[in-house]
Image 1 (cartoon, protein in one colour):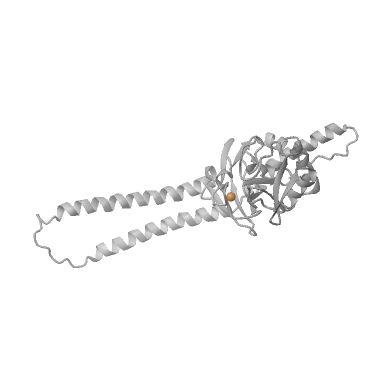
Image 2 (cartoon, protein in one colour):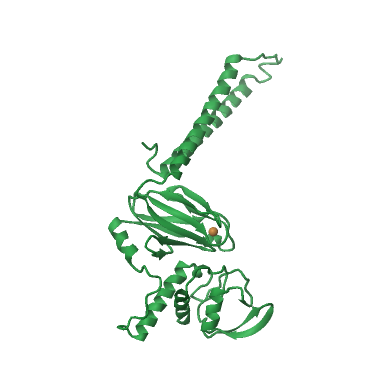
Length: 315
Ligand SMILES: [Cu+2]
């Protein structure tokens, strides 16, 4: 029989018991101090007298704080064990942290920039980092776990109410760290089932003869738009012309500009080839005025690059 019903409860109990003991000690010590200052004031006791030890008092003030400290440790320990033991029947979702977004992937290959989960079922989130140190933090479920490159780890939680819950990155990971936010979207199980089966393929198969060329391009463009959200491109590249860490996507295709290649300035016009190269080798041509900060898009497929390029052409 589990001691707790949820990760929230495990943390809350340890937190409030520890807080209660701390506040109790603060009040006790402060009150005693004030009482003693008044009671043993120099006016009442002009001459200080030597006090010898008091065995019972010594035992009490050694044993009681020891028990309190052990009690706090015990709650922390059982809570920690509970939070590392994923219950049976949990759905599994992979989460990848990268500068500066979270990407979630489901067992059927479906990907999303938000963490959709069915209500009333435990969720195990397998965590990994694509670049630097991040920390996956969902305050509502009291889970926070560092996400370290090269280290696979996890958290689990059990959503009992539908709704939206914040996800933050709780480890400073660069310029737009504070924008590295997402949501846990808790929905009824049937709705979740529908959602997880939609748009499983990140890029639609384009060789469908029944559709016109125009429709195929449109499907590719939509896939590109979704990918740019999933891959976190929008964290640094705006689509409305505003300046973020990287150049805006607005009006990008066909724009003329200066890039720095191997330390040399050169004039370019943005075409398909340039876009493709900039996705695959972000440090090759750096747009003048920006830093070489874009992470490499490891593991991106040819189709995904095509879809993103198609999308960028339309902005
Ligand atoms: Cu981060």
